[in-house]
Length: 456
Image: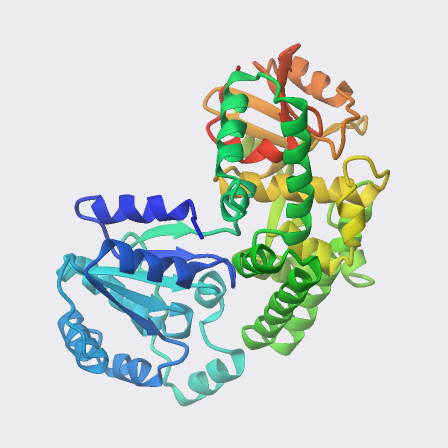
């Protein structure tokens, strides 16, 4: 399936003096698939080393991280020549071998001509917590086998990219709607309304995306079978995998907290005030108890955190309140499977009067904005007025209002826009494209267009 990150990989390959690349992202977002496709299409050959499955490589690296000896060893092991600039070396699941992570530093310093990409699903967690299951770490600490250098991230020695689930545009590509995707971008740029029939067709596909989500295996299953039940089976398997990772990469007591936070997300989003409340995760819960668990979920790429800002002054990063935030799932399809939202409700989400569907739309927008590199922040004042997302673009602050259907209310949006002298605002809803009263109307299916913030 066509993915946007492919162009970023091509740009990396063509950039003179590029460093070894680390590709991060949650499990099952398609990292291995896209790297193998990239190796086939843009190199003469490639070697993929699955560090979680090949103990021989891990054992070799325990005693040797000299780049030339690593290259010679891999050539022998895989019976494949590794030629500078012609062979791509893929180190998959690098969080299971920090010696491989350390080796990237020496490749960059001494042999930068080799093209190496490391992929890691839980690399952030691994670096934070020691890479291995806690029981194994404890044994090594007692035996004195852990070495400090093994646990250093090669800061400044690697290039980095993050991969996300497929956004709605990639979903359109996968389902054979490339022309529609192009039309959406064209109308987004011009602010001209779509023909009514095309608008309704795009909304219908958006509602299906809420069920299928952006995990590549689920999208592939939908393309193959058009069965939402099959998609949900795939999604439940992914959720089960997340739970297994929580047990593998955290101490038992921490695992309980991580799961409690994760399991509370549907309840958190079902509230009218979607601020994350620790007491919904566990009675008596506090930031001190659950802060580490939230951070684990963020590092694993399973959730997105949206912080409160109380003012719209530049820089808005300086206005953040760390104690007040919302938590969204990284994939809207996984959210709906976890929350057991009936598919038929999502297929009528534009018109159905259900509070949780507003949260689903917010989660969808959070996923799309995050994939475009936009930091998630929201605003509310003492009068309970709230704007779902606030974006800074240079010297401009742009409010983003999200509505699940066609009913819109601009009181909070207009108040923020007037108070902080915003050049324009986004309203994301079930309505067609348009621009009036300094509000740019963006249909729910066109959120993927919001990246470089520009007025009409």
